[in-house]
Length: 188
Image (cartoon, rainbow, N blue to C red; front, top):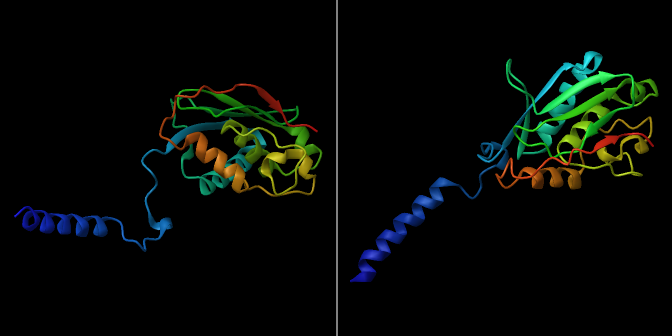
């Protein structure tokens, strides 16, 4: 008797589960995860680097799923402030959390020496997302910074760097970890 009741019920449940997520579903067509952390940035003081910062934001947004960078709407405090000065590029080490705040300095000294502005911006944003420098390092490592060389224009994080950022924001526990806050100056 129990078998006659449970068998149809389990069959119906199995059909329901199969129809919810097809085994052949393309991951690119899946919606973003509900636990995605959104961090707001303000590049209004980035001066001539505003477009480089926007390009670097696109690099990160297309590289990781657990965190997304968005321009801060009017009246909202940004977690990542981007400003330009005449020094060397530098940033506070994160991972920054919603409600926290770090600063990225797009120091003109880096581009004056010939380094790629978008690579600099992506590298400095990487610090905000919790990645330390990986120096010395090859051009294929975004976090190798200036040790990749003046001719290095790789703007994308490698698999290890992407994985570390995903882990920093991956459990839906945004706000539980405190930002490191150390200032990292990206000079040899």
